[in-house]
Image (cartoon, rainbow, N blue to C red; front, side):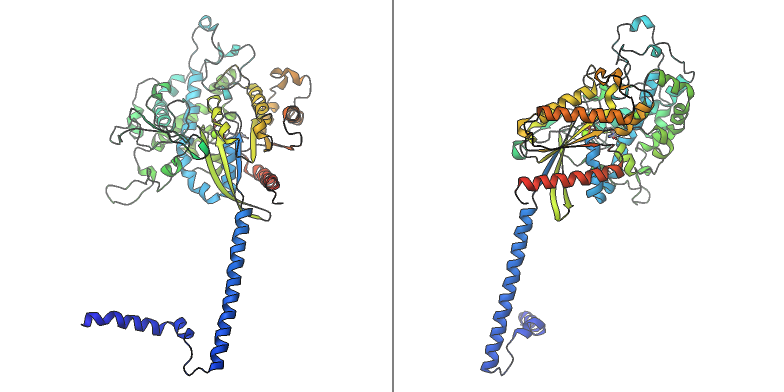
Length: 553
Ligand SMILES: Nc1nc2c(ncn2[C@@H]2O[C@H](COP(=O)(O)OP(=O)(O)OP(=O)(O)O)[C@@H](O)[C@H]2O)c(=O)[nH]1
Ligand SMILES: [Mg+2]
């Protein structure tokens, strides 16, 4: 009985103590007049409330209409700076997320640093006899032509009988652990098809495994990202890296082959959230718990973390990079590492510190090749337009990636095309007989002449202007590589103007839309301050163009 009464009591108490319910009750002894005016007041209040609801509905619809989606495609050859440009958009419009992801870039920065070391060791290797090399491919001495300067006659003569580096064997032995680490990092970050890092896989997956391929159809009929994952998890596989100690005694070959890893790499193409996996607290890289205390600790407490090998090798890296003979040998081989992607050799102690956290500038400099198409969404305000949804597509620019671009042409509003004009003396990694600027011009021509893109706003970034300036200041002559430049002055202003005119004239000659206004910017997209201003201009141009198209202005 007592049980049955309790709920009723509770209900009564609630209704009596509810001030709103009490206020709405008609007063006791209400007269007819009072009742009439009470009901009228209630009707008036409802009318006002309905009016407000209607206004909110109207506003919502209006906002929906003006919150048109802007879709932007970043195009350009590999290493033109597309992903770096995207990072700048993130830094500007999604700053918190960019900062949260900084830690995840550690692995890429480590790999970039280790690759620079390997390239030096490759360059220092004593040359075999001259006769054996007479018909050698000019690129045989480097895997990364983007940073190797090739003379018109092929192999630089001084590369053959160059400066001897007496400490070469010592460096090679001491830096051997880094070569093993490079293998490991490549396996973590690469696609099976590539010999260059493209994406992350989790730290612990580096066992030789067969792959299972999953594909599915993405929105708008676009090919969805392809994900290659191992059928089983091999987390118990012994690590090739057991801290610094295990590797320092190793005697295996110093120039471990990247190709030997290719078949067993775990690759994640484009979509998966690799950054999350490598962030602090991310699913794959939770800070390790100490077996003793059970407390969460930093990655530097994990004996398998690559930082230990790097930290142990740091003094030898420094010594080699400061060695005058080494520098001389690199000069003879025309290997300008300072100008290459992912250069961190000038900051070895900072990068290899146990508690190193990448800065914004480090992340912008980090080189990770894009495979497929990566979509990023931002909410961007511009002038009176608040919170416009932007989708920016970052594509892989290497030749074998370009077939993936076309499906995106139908829906986009704008293209930002990047052409690295500092690369006039470089060749494509994927086709070492093609000059990089020539390739950019060809690509540019096919984009701006495309009828499907006739109504699309096009913004051209003549990129890597900082490197162009350095190169010209160092005396590299444009007319050695582009005869059409003739005997014009070899300074930055003249050269940049020449490229601006060349790209502009090509657009004018082949565009199917003579009305289209072309916006050209001289950029260095690693420079945050300069790029922020350019991006905000571009943003306004694109939004204005987009609203015009949608007849909203
Ligand atoms: N100094 C300098 N470096 C740049 C500039 N733009 C890009 N880089 C560097 O060049 C490298 C390549 O840039 P990415 O943005 O990865 O090139 P990408 O066009 O995305 O290349 P793919 O993904 O292969 O198509 C990175 O290490 C960047 O930090 C620039 O204007 N100046
Ligand atoms: Mg990229």
